[in-house]
Image 1 (spheres, one colour):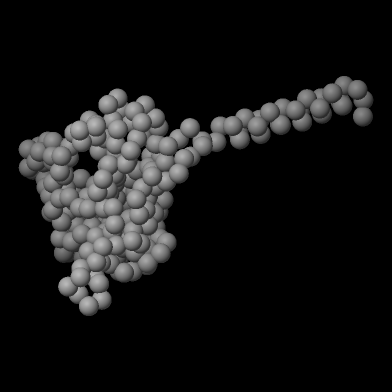
Image 2 (cartoon, rainbow, N blue to C red):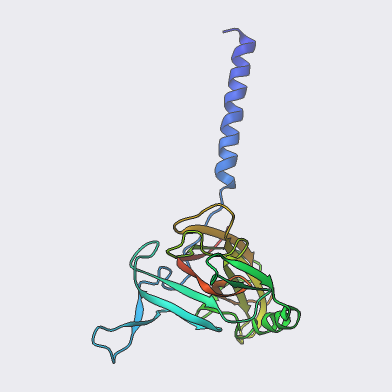
Length: 242
């Protein structure tokens, strides 16, 4: 190999090494998962039942109007349990129905009035149904956090659900007094035209705003009214980046 070719080979090797190092450096460093009972395996039980029927997963509670906040012993993404919401009874931007055998939606004529009411309530206690962390997760203002979840639309019908709607999450940032600073969108898993089966991982990066010392995580439906579709969640994570 000539001297010029050798030098070129060395330069290429060094360049590849630097690129590789840069990629490694660019990979985000994730802190520990801050979510309590992230796979919902720990549960409170009803002492009045002989078998101790699960009532709520430890560390979680519910808000809003639905046919059913479902939490029972079944296979999750991991473990034996997950949490689910069977339809939203709160007014949404669409009204969807499956009684005809296919999922159809029509615009909700009252949405212009009910939408702002739903949005305003979100800061304190949502009208729309959500699973919510019982206590705020401690955070640092200005820090970035990665919020991820596994979600599924369980149904005997693999085409269940409405295209463009599905599972969503939100973050309710709170200050030292517990008052809401801001509510922002978290990850979402909306139905596409492509047939989907099984749990789906989705994530979003969020930044704690000024004044925030805690974050409450909310898991629920997107903004539509439906009585015939269920969304379920498992393996929730909330980790500081950097």
